[in-house]
Image 1 (tube, helix red, strand yellow):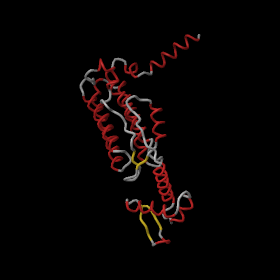
Image 2: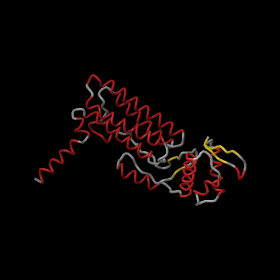
Image 3: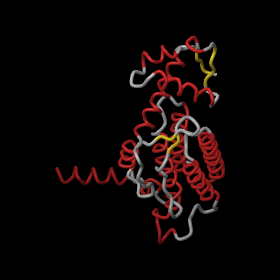
Image 4: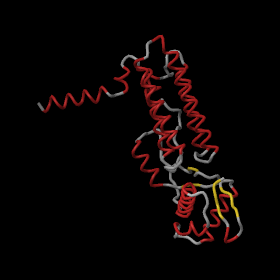
Length: 259
């Protein structure tokens, strides 16, 4: 009985394998596995976004939808493969656009954006090919899915504000362990506690202003107690310079609000 259960389990696990799932469409596994790893990379990068950042959840939702859609290839009739490729390309281009917006807004480093953009275009090229195969597939197999040197850079992930760098070694290392992909390599990150504290202060200030339209320095100081009012003033001034906040009143009567 125990041996039968073991065999049953092994069969069940094997049936969930991508190669078995696509059966005779083994060549398409390359596109599927590429999509899977790109989605994993998106989760790694967005893992460094604040939970209050809408783009984090938009990118994750769209990435998951792309992977789910690719899985429908199995049930797509041969005559509908052209439409399938078209809609996959449309979803992929939407993700590239969202990544570009994130890069321009400082949420994603230019290096990471460039790498992912190229890999998404590579995915499109695979789908555009007539037989959905890659040269050298029989030799390289799925290990050839990504371009040589593909990795999600973890050196520097930019924060929500231009010029602000976030160093999050622990989160990045944990993400790599969870994803466990040979193609996505973790690199050494120099932890900068001052930058982390600065980022936390900025996030708290923004969260407070989202709840209340106007705040004074004293209002903020009641919540942020690990720094002086002068430090809070500097944070507010940096927001004003970046066009995020506006100030009304002067000196001790100054009030701050979102633009």
